[in-house]
Every structure is written in structure tokens, then in C-alpha cells.
Length: 202
Image 1 (cartoon, rainbow, N blue to C red):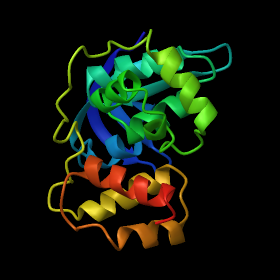
Image 2 (cartoon, one colour):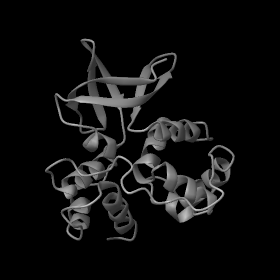
Image 3 (cartoon, rainbow, N blue to C red):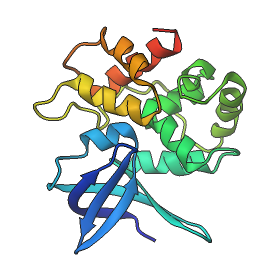
Image 4 (cartoon, rainbow, N blue to C red):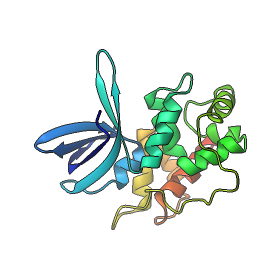
């Protein structure tokens, strides 16, 4: 099983797929939109922790900026009805600490920020994840970036736009929500703000 990759970033696909060359072999890796835009520059060296999913008819690598993200992803896909696509969507909205806090506080509304997750599904996930995640006994500090800093020299809104496109939002929705966001700031925080606005109708 492949647990991590370090190599040259050859391509960054619009659908959240990276092509990482390791020892002259290109590996296709599925990642969250935020990881895709912050992992590194094309032709530069990148590193990802990976979950290697093997099925009868396919093998897929899922990549994560931190080992904490990978572990949470593996807990998510072990929950009933959560496949890799939904697992990545959840991590696109909530980092590991934020997800643990939401589950610990029975915050169903937080999980409803994930595209495609309704109240019933969110409530079921909160209950099931209580036994799968290492929940805090006290308050968790909110991470300042969790791998979501803006790309060097770039507009944070451009990274948020790419992330929202990866989550399936349309151009009109994205344009409407980006107008109210600052040009600079933590990409992860701005993405959550954008998702809240979209959930409330902007």
C-alpha cells in the first residue's frame, strides 16, 4: 500500500486531481480543492500523505497535506454511506479539528455546509462519527491555516474560486459570493465564509 508520495507536480487538474511524478512514474492523486491550490507550484517538489484504495476494478490514490487529514478521511469513509467523494467534500469544508469540534458539539448545521449533505445525513454522521473520531475533552484551538494559506503572490479569492469550482458550484454562484470576500487572507477561512454565504443564499 502506498502511504505517501514525494515528487514533481506535473499537472493540476480542474477536478481535484494532481499528477505527481515519482521516479519517472506519474501518479494520479485525488485531493480536496484547497489542497490542490495550495500544495505547491507546477514543476516543483510536493509531498502528500496518501490513502490507497484498492477495488476489484480500480486503484485510486487520495492525497492529503497532513497525516491528520488522512486519518480523518479514513474514519469518514468507514462511516455508513460515506464514500471517498463525500469524504473529500467534508474535508474540503472542515479541517480535522473543525470536524471533531462539530461532532463533539452535535453541530449538525456545520455538516450541512457540505454540498450534498442534508440535515438527516448530517445528524446520522454526527452520531456515527462520535465513535470513530478522537474527540476532544476540552476546546480545540482553531487552526490558523491547516495547509490553507494563499498561494505565494496570489489572490486568495482565486484559490477560493478554484476550490468552489471543484465542489461543483456554478460560475454565477461563485461570482456572487466572491464579491464580498477580501483579496487576501487564509484560504481555508475564506472558503468556509463563502460556503456559509452560499448556504444562506449569498
